[in-house]
Length: 401
Image (cartoon, rainbow, N blue to C red):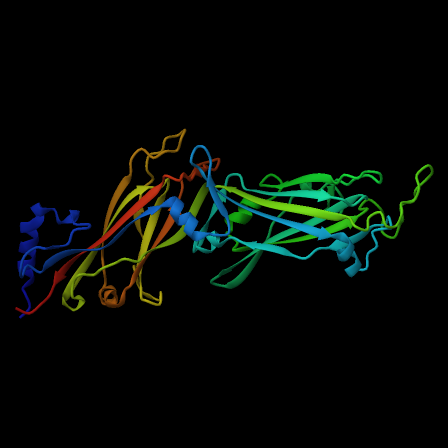
């Protein structure tokens, strides 16, 4: 026969003084035939720096003197004007308005691919260009930047809005310094795209997985179309070969200091080393106990998914539960004084209990939010931040005597 339920109630009352709720890592069989069992499922400590390093190998990651984390990316290119212009039927020996389009360049940000939904705002993201120009004639560049990512609706695209104040020439062109006809040294130009010259913070907050840049060059951008610059004495018309070997050297650097504002940003992390030390067939009911020791500077909702060996979802909790409270921050250094401890207990459905048989990984999905305020409050991420998660189970067993 099945053990009567009233005996289970008596057992619960008798062991209440044993504080079973503290059994977050130690397994305990309370006694023979009580029907109550507590066991650990898994635990892990997440170092924020390690999580970020593991999420993106294409971006360099560093910290400043205060321990704030920063991402960066750098890429250089050399534009051979002679070959580019020849391929497009352009002669840079003539002082006329003419354009050269350069191949599209792109780079990925795998870190953004780990975010499942939501967005964040960076306080001071910068995209910097250093352009070294050997071309001895007035020059302007056109720049278009757009990002793509894949969501539930398929591939989507968003264009970076560069404000009109960024451009100083007609037709949305940015002037580039050039050497004069008699100079031998190249001219250097620095260009910065940030949230004052564009919606760069909002663009990155959309979390594009890949960013593309289309750059074009317009020689003699101030000249009307089909007109030729006239050289008056004592100036002489330059030799046609004077720009033959001219090159443009570009260096692009992306700087992402991790001072940010999070808005329902869903971040998954996996708990791989799990154990279920009980015969699932004997479980009458199961309560998951999730204990978090939060030293991250934000609060969160949490959901759990049970994954099989192929990372297919076997079971998900029906509702998120509040698991991380915002810990107290030092308002100057942003150091966390002590962890915020939170304990949640969630009953599994029969479907969830059955899924335990084939569960290899528990996927923890944290939906993160920083402190709200007006104006927007930004919180720096420090390398010392950690999150410790412990998951255990308490079951009532149903078995024949």
